[in-house]
Length: 114
Length: 114
Image 1 (cartoon, each protein chain N blue to C red):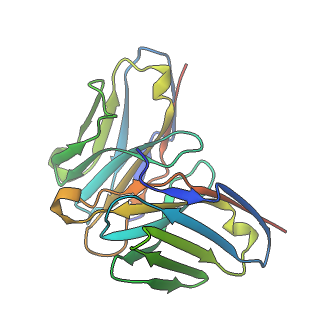
Image 2 (tube, rainbow over the protein chains, first blue to last red):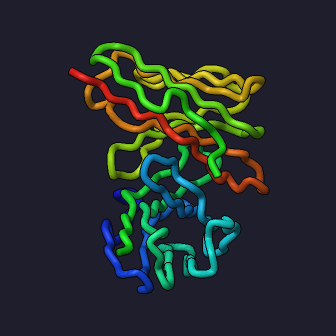
């Protein structure tokens, strides 16, 4: 296992288009998190899964955002009808709570909406 | 929303000097973690300190935690140019309600010059 993998690394899309990002977590980790980070800020929580169940969604996650984790493995984050304000780095992380090792983050997907 | 604030926002030092970053937070925690982020990349977990611990060491890193003041500090000793990065503290409320969902601070940008 080589860590958390995110695809694509970069995405440029026109306003109004839909985009989908994928995250492959560390296979032993049962928790998967999505965060969004804008320039000069810390990551902001969007949503998280325990296995296949989505347990919490941030108020930041408008109805244009949806996330899934079928079968408790990889996860996808879809943004519909993108807006310029959606431009950010989208980070995925996985963890196994109680181990004391914190989160393992992927390299992120940088979204630019033009 | 950001739970913590790091201080200073930016820090520039010479190689070989020590770097100290501070983090303040607002709510009770189960543990506090520090992460490093190189420009345009994902975050890397550095160290985790539990609420019943006061100090922890890992290599050139030393973390302190004062839960009465809701503050933590990260000390990097004998800094190297490769330590140039942004550093974030993150708080974990713990428990089933918190979901081990991390809330990140605003970050300190550290620049280590040769």
